[in-house]
Image 1 (cartoon, rainbow, N blue to C red):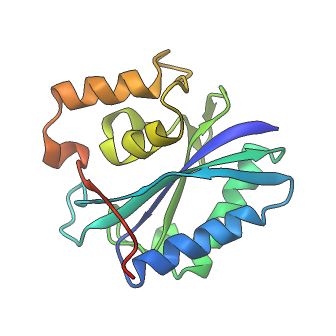
Image 2: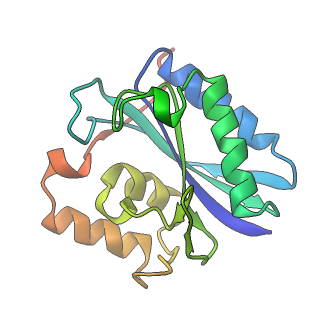
Image 3: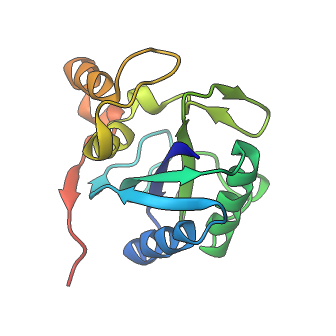
Length: 173
């Protein structure tokens, strides 16, 4: 079993419902155990497309699945939430659900379909902050820094609008 950290994001439709459905689906993945889910943060969208704010979280999954297989399951969860396939959607555009593998143990993976560690995670507050809420001592296998160190570095050098700085939020009653 390997520890895998997954970024969850949503800014379309029932955002809280999308996160809850994703969490429930991940808890049912074969050969896997959902061990932790971070608090949720509301963050502005980052990128060239103007759109609504995101809800972001990170989940920690222990799995015996191979990375490509897990990736396919995650794509299925996204599609079930209504997310369009890559060719049908606007790059960096709004999305019902976005599930990204940000770390897969200490593996470094680079294929046409999957790059791990996520190539932008070290520049994204909305990934690092919730990941630190789960475990700030996790080491980025390429940069050889803990995610806590990466978050501190980002907060020292970053502009809030560029790094996706947000606020912790609770699900409305």
